[in-house]
Length: 397
Image (tube, rainbow, N blue to C red; front, side, top):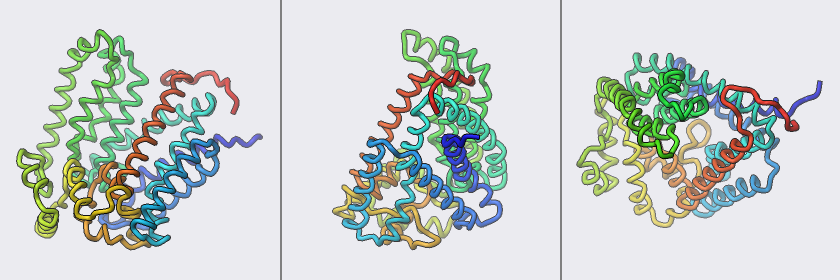
C-alpha cells in the first residue's frame, strides 16, 4: 500500500485542532481553572510540535520562506535588540506566533491541488460541524455552574469566551454560506436552521461583540446586487428577533460586576485618566469584588497609545515576545508584571501583536492575513467545490 503524505499531514492538522480547542474544558474539570494545568502545558507543547512538523513537511515555496523569514527578523530585532530578552524567553514567546507563521503555508499545501483541497475541505466541514455541536452541552454546563462570564469558553475552557464567540460565528457562517441559495434566502435559512441554532451558545457568555457579529452574519450572507435592499428588508425581522433573544439572555444573566462598562462617560473617565489610576481601580476591584475585573476589549485597544506614551522607543517594535507566553517554565517579563492588569483577560489580536511587536509587527500580521485570505479565495473559486458534495478527484496527489 502506497504511503500518502497528504493523509498523514491532514490527520495531524486536525489532531492539533482538537487538542487546541478541547483541552481547556477537560482541564477545568480536574484542575483549578485559574492555574495552568499539566494537561494544558502538555497539550500546548504537542500542538506546537505538530505545527513545526507540518511546516517542515509543507513549506517549500519562496513566498512561505519570505513570510516566515520576515517575521523572524522582526522578532529578533524586537526581542534581542530593542528589549534585551534572553534566548529562552524569546524562543518561548515565539511559540505564541506559531499559528500565524505556520498555518498559512500549511493550508496553502492543502489548497495546491484539487485532490488535497477537496479531501481537506470535506473533512473540515464535518469537524467544524461537530465542534459547533460540542459547544452546546459544554457552554450550558459552564453557564449553569459558573454563570455568564470568562468561565463560559465552551470546549476551549475558561478565558476563551471571546475567542469562542468569534469561532462559532465564523464556523456557522462558513457552513451556512456553502449551503444557502442566495436567490431564495428565507427558504435556505429555514432548511438550514441548525446552523443558526448553533449560534445559541454565544448568548450565554458576556461577549458583547456577539450582538454586532449576528448582524454582520446575516448581512454578509446576502449577495450585493439590485435586490440587496429587498432581501435585507425581509431578513430584518429575523435579525431583530435574534438580537432581542440574545440581549434578553445577556441582561438576565450578567450583572455587570467586575466590568468597566462602555457607557457615555467611558472616554472621559478612562481615556483621559492616568494609567496608574486605572491600574489602582482594577487592583482594588480584584481584591474586593467576587467577580474577576476585566477591562472591555475596546477599552484595551484604546489604552495602547497610553502604554507606548509611558514607554518611549517601543511603538515601532513593541515590548518583545513572551508577554502572553509564560508561567510554568519561563517567568513573566517585567512588562507583564507592570501591566498585568491590562493584559489579563481576553486580549484582541491587534493588541497582543501591537504590544509584542509594535506597529511593524502589526502591519506584518494584517498583511499576512490579507494575502492568505486572497489566496484561499482564489483557489476556492478555481476548484469550485460544491457544498456537501464530493467532486471528481482529477488532480494528482
